[in-house]
Image (cartoon, rainbow, N blue to C red; front, side):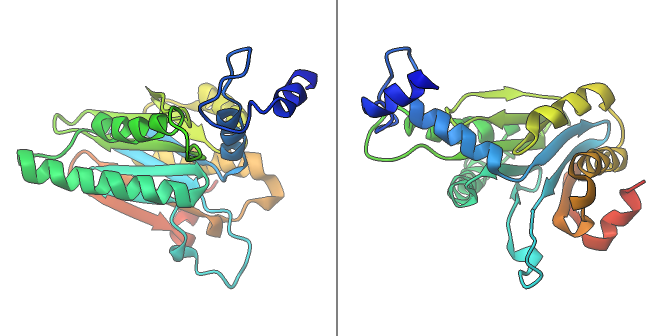
Amino acid sequence: MEMEVQHQVMGYDRAASMFSPDGRLLQVEYAEKTVRLGSASIGLICQDGVVIVADKRIFDILVVSQSIMKIWEIDSHVIASAAGILSDARVLMERVQVAAQQHRVTYDQPIDTESIIKEIANIKQAFTQYGGARVFGVEVMVTGINSNNECKLYVSDVTGSYAGYKATVIGENDEKIKEMLRNSYKEQSVEQGIKLALNIFKKVLGKNFNISRFEAFFIKITDKKVKKIYGDALMKYIK
């Protein structure tokens, strides 16, 4: 704590491109803290497809739930979610939606999932390297089914690094949820994956759990079409 205060006094947190004496980018670390304040999303690779279940964390009954974007359709075979500053995420999502369509027009085939996360990661990395703008305060999860029917799930952090997963989470309570996934995840059907994710959220949130806060997007290998479940339709997945 004393070292962090000293860094701030000396101005090492004034720019995302300025390293502190011990090799840290303090603005990037602040952005990572912002991500952990964001509502959570769980992504899973299943036997027959991929799924993301997201907590929209809406408490105001006057808000129209479907107007809040937490999961995006990038293309018919790729979906994505984000944690952190969702306005930052929206900009990134719109860029890769265009990139996906340009790939279809240019090559007459769907873009692969890793190309989507790589495009997002490259944009985020640039904002840690050049001055004049702050870093993206968002972590992004991308999952989809490639043309060879291979299911993929990736997460990109605020630095622009990314990695592939079988199951993972972004947002608040991430370490607690990851530990629960390590203990309970196994490759099963999309329906069972949705059930697993919702019941993990139920355990973590306790009395704050409300099914109206959640939405699930999934893609099955059979048709490679994005489908969405929310509200009362999710009730059947809760024990």
